Image (cartoon, rainbow, N blue to C red):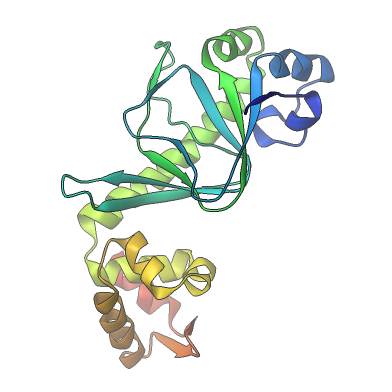
Length: 220
């Protein structure tokens, strides 16, 4: 069940940084706070919403489903970030880009979209935060396009090792393969190839980069 948000729920979050207590009080009046358990679905692809969803705490994944009911991982979103992808500020509703699943317990702010837009008009300084959030989201989507349309399997793995080594080592290899949309066996073969080329080494399943520039040359 969603509860009415309080000013304390908004303080410290990037989106509302620099807002006065009076402004936060106004924002809280049109924001709900909802808690989700791990594996809960926040919303589905192609849902139509009249709210923005902002991840206060937790970790979610964004994915689509193909016509064979296979999950296609797109990207993940961590605490203090916008979940909703806005395509146009002139629309009063939002078409959801993908399915959103919680990877751990999450707290989500559900923001009335129309009232938020009116607040932005009256308080344009918050738009700088909105622009910055979506500029970073566009960078994420550019990486996604490269990963899925430009890079082959080896380039996908090299790019991920260079840019997300900690995540790569934290996840099980099957989960890494899922995120890269390749088979686990393919991932194992690629890692062996990179080890043979002295670009990386693996000790007890933990990858260490030996030749950073060599890895970058694979995808640049």
